[in-house]
Length: 268
Image (cartoon, rainbow, N blue to C red; front, side, top):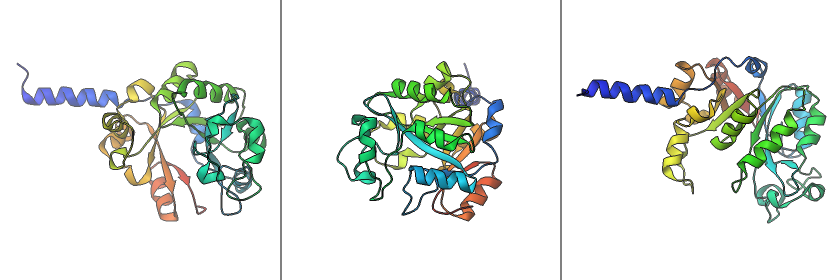
């Protein structure tokens, strides 16, 4: 019979295998050495995920993190929330909208409107790297993943894709293996959520990595010290990305620890 120690070693070995990602992706080096402005370099007059915020980031020499949703007409909108209530004051969801609606969707009471992803890429013009978060809503994970990747494969700049949804990361792994891909994560067990607790446990502890084989783990800064995240980085050598850093001390700590930094509400 297997003794207790042997059983524990086997269980720990399986645990380590579940955490495995893809390491030594050659394109990953192009994303290192930059600080990334979370939703652009935004402030009160230049709203998050606006063309103005993205221009400011480019002009200041920062990389950009942004969020993508798939709209009803197949176009891609750059906005964080599915609901337009917080950002636009409109009781609708971006997935119901079309490109023709976007000029009427003014952000935070300014003249800035929700931009199309293609327009952002044209403006950036390969000058800074991009971290593109794919937002899957209502089971559209394959459709939004394909739409984003189809646009990015024609873009000649430096970029990576990431998502909280492992189905998105898995889709990118299967259909676009040359893309740098990352799994977003945080300690979701601390929060109320409609997501089943078992799934939140798997995501919190990076136990879906064996399906997605991420090149990097983008983990929330305040939650970064869990065991799985430590093992992903120190045992398997997976690159860490830290979000969202809100002051110089957090930024310096993240950089010193080897994380790629995503910052907001200050400039490092």
